[in-house]
Length: 86
Image 1 (tube, helix red, strand yellow):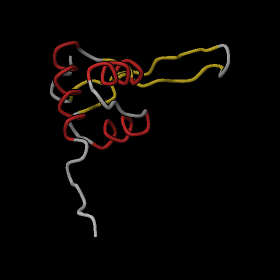
Image 2 (cartoon, rainbow, N blue to C red):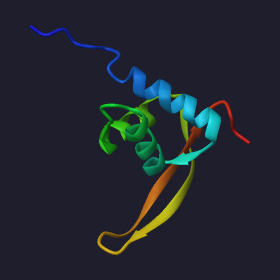
Image 3 (spheres, rainbow, N blue to C red):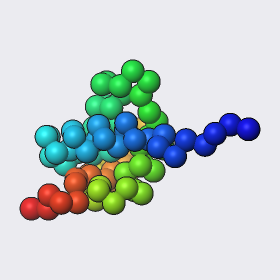
């Protein structure tokens, strides 16, 4: 039986905390692009969203409206760190 890894997203969480601390609040798409650029394996939007929503260090700062020609308009969350509210 395979051993379950309890810290499988630890590297992702730590890189996101460091990036948000240095660069300030970013949208979900900006965080995904950043992590896929600096990481060898990258991640998916679903995995990133789960990490951001379940880790108490990340908070939703704002919501922005994004429009695309193929998928229409939708809301995207802007994330920040919990201890750095302004």
